[in-house]
Amino acid sequence: MKKKAEIVQLLQTYHELGQTEEAALFLIDEFELNQPNFAGIVLREPAKPDYILFTAEGEIGDPIYIRIPENVFEYQFELIINLLAHEMMHVIQKSKLYSIQAREEREWQAYYEMCFHKTFPKVPHASTFHRIFFAKKALEYYNRMEKDGELQKKYAIQKSEIELLINKLEK
Image (tube, rainbow, N blue to C red; front, side, top):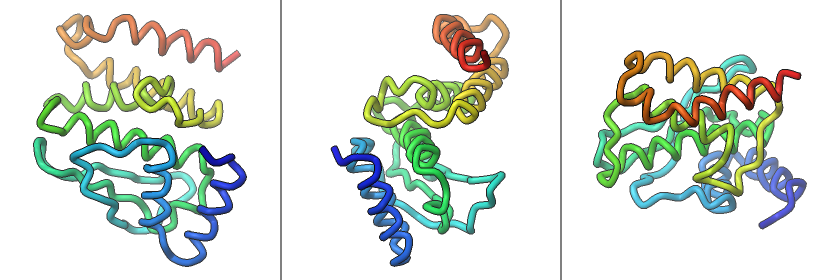
């Protein structure tokens, strides 16, 4: 795997050449995020500093595209790779193999991954600020699950991990 400085330089070069899709595909390969039902990268309107929107688009069981802002590589590398990993979790979840129907469960799993990188261990951690944000978003989706229902019970141990992470990072 390339060193961070080399990766950031390559991303900057891709960005300057207007090759946003190629830059994203490079990251997906470099950090071993690719999935069999990943259909490719599609660009969307530019992001704003306070709102960077990535989406995984396609029906469950079909190939899934990830839509990213055309100016995405103007932002912090660690944040961008974590957002890509989040969307690639959705690619996995929407595969024929998993077909996870409940949005709350999909978002819970994706935000949990952004905190701990158990599915994609090569992805570096984002800043402490962003990790706290991701952890709180995970809890938000956990709390949207049926109270004491099957999903909350399924993820109770992971919820404790998220709460411990928040306490650790906020100190």
